[in-house]
Image (cartoon, rainbow, N blue to C red; front, side, top):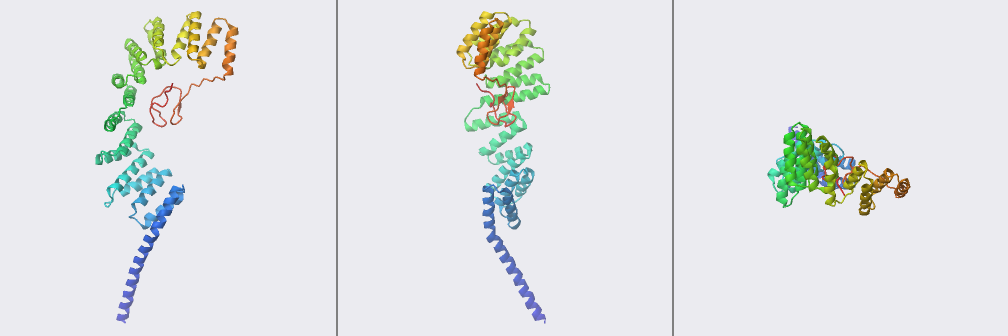
Length: 378
């Protein structure tokens, strides 16, 4: 009897071993097929099916690192970035990862955190990657975008500067805009002097940095330093006649406050002498002539402006205004009819050329897509 029990136990043990071996073999043999099916589902956009198959794979084959990585990717794609970060983060505790797998997982983790609205955590991972591999250009670009997203303009400045040095290129205009953004933050925190320092630094980097001049002048005006504000704007229109029209309203206020409004015509004329490629400055000078009753000069200048910008509707609209002020109703009506025939429509909105974000004010950093200088165009 004991002998029979021993034999039976031995047979049961063998059966268990065979079951385990065969079971593993079945899993391993079926695993690649399921994995291929999951990849095909991913490529064909069948996201739910891909997630289900990847979940099956990682349950039966916990050593399939790529299945975990793709599962996290799919979760992020479906809007579950926090769950994706958990899947990818859990992989990092494994000791058997090779360098390529580790790098792949950490790059994925950056995207998870970024999508989940956790730029600080994403930046920490990117910084870790760069410490381990200073030649990882992709990680450096991601880190720069994260600094911009966090509005950490000082870190963004030094990081882009180092990146430019490494890539042997210059982005002085973007570096200058970082200084402007940092200066605006200082101003917002009621640190006017510190803000002006940043604006000056921006202009040293790029003499054509439009917002640096405007914000610098505004800061002086807020603190009662009208002469200094005027000096900055005069320098601005001298350096940037194409964008001088952005300073005209500010100039009017400053000169009025200083009791020197008569200088405005001289400033307009100085810009015109530089022959800007925009009609704005001509239009404000024409309008000034009308206000002063100098109708013949206004008519002469508006006609010259139309000769220079024949397709500009605003110039023709100004001609209508001049004719009306001169009581030339027939000419005004004829010009207005001609204008309507061309279906002229003035649109005050500036549109980001990258994402379509709309604004009525000039902007240099798009809050929609975080691209630079996508609003300013001739």
